[in-house]
Length: 430
Ligand SMILES: *Cc1c(COP(=O)(O)O)cnc(C)c1O
Image 1 (cartoon, helix red, strand yellow):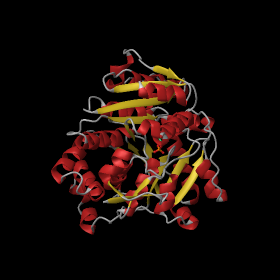
Image 2: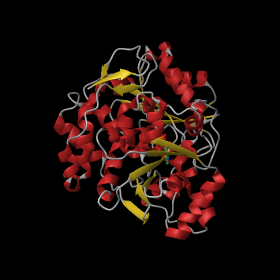
Image 3: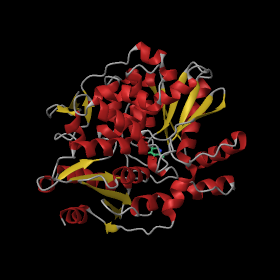
Image 4: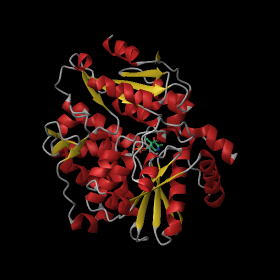
């Protein structure tokens, strides 16, 4: 499979090169040159396929030739070694839980897949690769966990000081080994900007092999297609018109759902559910794309002012506004509405949801107002105890900590403080 740069000013590359480079030399995101829908038999037999079989069938064309089939099968199987259950709340709303992995957010899937691919590409390589990752909370944790102990790979995580939850911070600052955490005096956007600057800094890139583990990296982004298919497998017999509501920040997740749609997943609509960072909600209303500085909210993993994957979504729908609108709705909700939704989910369904999933629930309800026959599946993207303060304060019920979280709570945080790009560069060159 070849990948081209969405800026169209860089040569095409293979999967392997796209994974190692992260971003194209012309600063464009990579996009697969072809997308071949899966055969009808795949959908006819989906009931009988395991997570790993579904994942392998979905990803193989995007990896082809760079990783032998048997190894790719193993990678997919190891990546998906936990559950993705669905819970139906009522005849119009279900939820798929993506938080049963080691760091309890959906990003485990992409991070584990990417780490294993890079580990494979790097196995006979004597040069180290440095993975740079900017995080608003969950990415860093998932990437740190996925890459822990991977030979020849160093991970440097940048996160905004005081803007991630206590549990998220523990998850990204306590691992040690090849994982390093930088605490940035600034916002998530500042972290993301520093990572971008590093990639463009020839002074750095001539000295070290840098790559990104954000959802701009195709190996992080594409495996996120899988769980849309898992939800379909569970629910399509009971419900006809399935629509996904995806709590969105950088729009990698919803965009992966759209790739699953390109593979033939019979879903004709997506809902991008946003917090007050609502660039895309506004775009769909006005056709004007106005990036803004991010605003801090209780669904912090979605505090993104200029979503990096939106350009891929436009590519999928051929840069045609009306096609995009046919396939995507977007709604935005305040923290106050989000808290009310956490309470409502608990009162009506005894379902404890995290703030991100709750925004997805609100998006489902908003869509159902004008599409009452749809069945909306919202993605519960993180375990509620990752946002313990908010959740316990709202529902007033103490939550037991899952074992994955208990395991990090008592560990000591180790970080380096930085406040600007010069600090960052000095750290990398050291
Ligand atoms: C990252 C994240 C999101 C947003 O996903 P994008 O792919 O950036 O749109 C939503 N919820 C949680 C819990 C996350 O960690």
